[in-house]
Image (tube, rainbow, N blue to C red; front, side):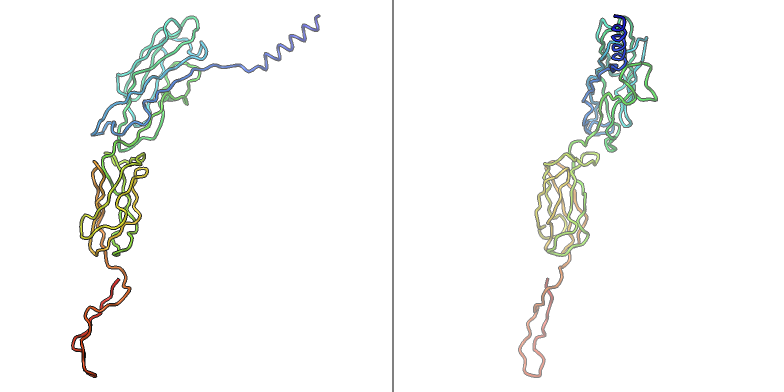
Length: 311
């Protein structure tokens, strides 16, 4: 009986020693309001500057001790460079009758500080940060996509299982605003031969107010036409933008002259190319400009012959 008890104790001890310990951590539900924010909302926009609501950041305990006990602990969330919060705007709430007994929030330009108290008998808590609003500083200088974080340099004092320097609290990125005009991506050549395809062929960008290419635009139709000079531009004159760029492939001009090309699209500011000097093509044959007149043998023709080359 004694040997059996010893053996059973040894087995139970080995099982306990080798069983993985399950460490709980909080679950963070990130907002999506900061995804694909239009450059038209940037601080320096002249067309709709505004803050964008993020939506709720929800921190939910996986174990009832994930929020460590403490009075007036702080959790500081910091924005990436190029963004700002709407200072003074934000809320914080928590599940009542559990461990969190008080919470407040202070929002300044680049950070939001949540202050909360945890005490009493452990219970599963949820902390919700809401009402935050963001804005980019410069629509022309699009900041790279980044996250709201608890950064190492300014983390606050709270100890929360599962939250560290790599934890994210919302993705932020800026995209081009509404189409406003056209811009040259590739100019046609400064010189060309009549009847020959331009090389290079022009390319035209669809841009917004800051000059950023609207790279999601696959529908704008751009139309080309001769502006300065004479004659009719040849080739496929209407092209649909692909990733914000309308690319021409077969434009040419048959009349020798100095021309420009104007590119237009519905409700957008047009753009005009640099001048193109269209010269004659290479000579391929000779023709009489003036036919010779009749003459007697040994005497000059009555009318001198005139010959010219043609392309």
